[in-house]
Image (cartoon, rainbow, N blue to C red; front, side, top):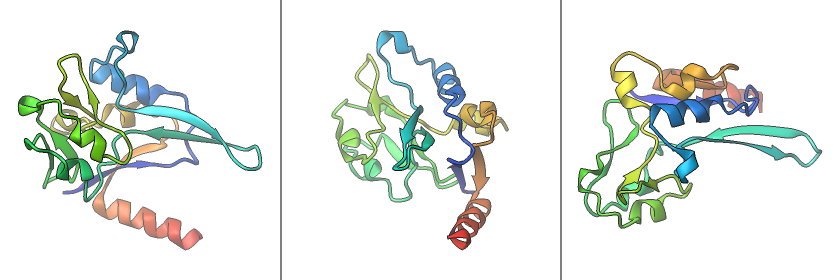
Length: 159
């Protein structure tokens, strides 16, 4: 069954809990300059109103990073639809990062690519991704393909 990490900007307070949970889950040490896989930020709108965001890998359907991989480290998981990786053979060429329109792939001290994998091991164990589990407002949710399409249709109907 395909899944989507869904973000509802109307519910986000930019508290950063999702980013901290991601850092904890993935052993990311920001004090050493390592970049977290999830970021939160605030943007001022045209009328001075504030908009809050939480971003990570978009797990694009036709992921450019997957197309730009010379050694096959990135792939689309047929079961979940998430863009996953196995960096065993990563040569640190950065072609995935150059292909990603969102600048998502990062590189560890070993020179190998890392990115959000939607906490796939947690999901296999029946748990939610860390960012979804800790989101206090429900802005981040894990939806099935059907739920995602229903949510998109409902949003389009509002416009």
